[in-house]
Length: 162
Length: 258
Image (tube, rainbow over all chains, first blue to last red; front, top):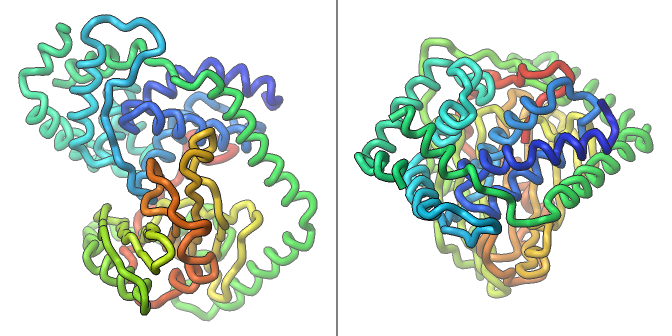
């Protein structure tokens, strides 16, 4: 591993997945693209020193998100962007509803849910990724789920059925 | 709810693709720029390395007699030990905002749009400051830890203070890396004071009332990097308590930070 060509091949394969995670974290497409670009650009900077680039990139993405949210004030605007490709009926509504619900959460809680339920990481892995204790991750998960439950309510079932 | 949320997230994102077709090309270009800058600094600045070493030595000497000697500039991870039982008090956001107000207030300036965010081990605060030449955002972030030392490795904009803290300065950096930069033309001056205990104070001054999605109002940010550095060094900030170490343990070569 080490050449820019290797990196491009890696990035081409990883961008779709990273972008979806970034979209869940960031709340809109432009912020998501910014997040992916910044994460991968920083990865290229240290590319020759990385053993597990996939895991590294996903952790770096979340850390970049947390750091940006700490450092800067984002104005989140959940919108149903005009899709580049054909979408099933219901997808824009589903995205709007999910983003509106996630927007109710603190950035760290949001990151915890995305890592736990979208990236399917264990509590221990999330704790390592975010530099928190496992007990803190468990607490944040429960709290964030409660909040989402309150926001989405029984609508979650309807959304899935869309 | 757990299964529902997983389903929702996958359903909501399964057809999502980046809007910008050249995201890969832009990413590679930005990454190569960063790498060239880093490589150039590492290879061409023997003097910089000497200075950095001198800074480390000076910091070490200075800190040797200090009871708070927990780390020196150049440490990748702050070595301050967290208190395992007592929960540190949350940082006061109002106090942070008030301090920012005090420090940026000057004759002829009006402050508006106060904003705070954070809690626990970090606190952010911002104002839009207008000196009659264009309203511009100024924000501060106080961190109890978890920030990367921006000067490991040493790069342009880094300097070491006598107490072992390091200051990283970035001047008039564009906010966007794509065509939106020419649309909004917002740039920022940024200063990060990274203390030897891992805590950090960062300040950003823009040339517009917001970081993104608003037009610039003046050619340059309201506060210069020198002014921001002076603010960062102010004794008025009430920093959060030192946070537990947040080390990256996923790979052996490097740690992802931002």
